[in-house]
Image (tube, rainbow, N blue to C red; front, top):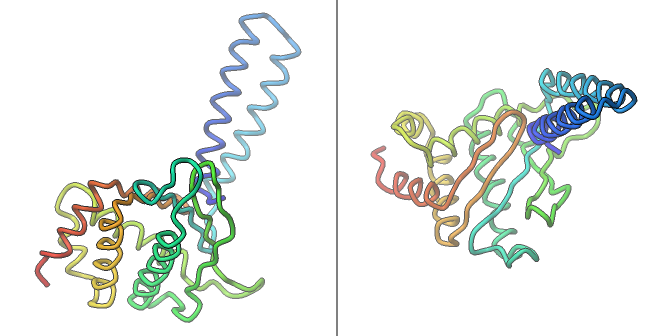
Length: 213
């Protein structure tokens, strides 16, 4: 689970525990009040630790939506494999422009699949004790760039003017693929939530096709 997902889960759990504490107080149940107070204190401690955590290992959760989903049963295997391959290639292109990143180590592994949310868990392929590769920071930067491409405002123009030709080309290929597949994507990693809706994907494709270089 990414740190962002863990924080969201803890916040939801904390809200539920506070609701139960209010109910216990309404029923004047001293044992339940004590139990939920302890539960809230434990969740608050875990939440504070998660908020202060800065992992040096790159992790991400990718949710797919749109036409590639086969109802609630699964996701088209040809789409998923190509989408994950292209995401890896876009990340490699991002790392090529990041001096702090070790491009040769910029590899992600699929470590899990959640069928209920149609999401893939990705983690950096790093050996125990290996020095920080900078991949987590590159992934942060890539998520921000993807969000700018598909988001409101004009910040995307300055961002695209800064990226090199390799990354620009891969961004084009990524959004053309997603748009052609009528797909949406949500990427959650560390403290960032990048939600690429169908409309946003189509907009990003158009921007990348017509932006001046």
